[in-house]
Length: 165
Image (tube, rainbow, N blue to C red; front, side):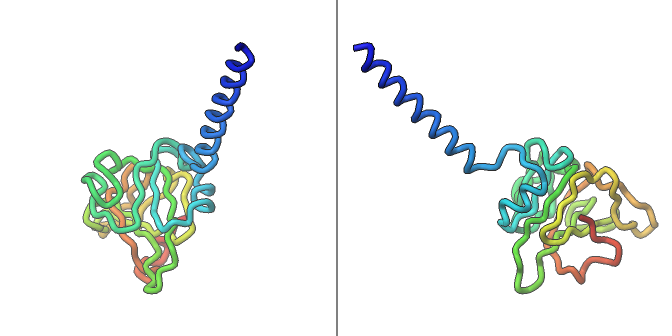
């Protein structure tokens, strides 16, 4: 009888271990690096994270535009606005050229406080050292913990010197 119990316990343990490792290897989350996200997913999303090198719980991801990271919908939620420290553009090739993501310091894609563009396949592991393009009065606002909206644009829509990554 003991042999049957030990055999049954071994089968159950092996099955549990196999299912745990199967799930873990199929899902790169929770905390891959920015380069691992870019090379492993290729899914057409822009990603944002609260810590450097894409660490921490993902703030959101979106294949479309999001005019307000502080409101539900659009891929980012109320907890995402003004919290991003690292970003990844995993955009797909768009036949119309909309594969660059413009990141704004203000909602509704307003560039009054500045913006920066991130090309398809690029990422920024730490936004702390980056500033937005100058706003109309010439002030350059820091990017870390200030992104409030994003939209997909053509590279030609980005001013000279506005590309990061």
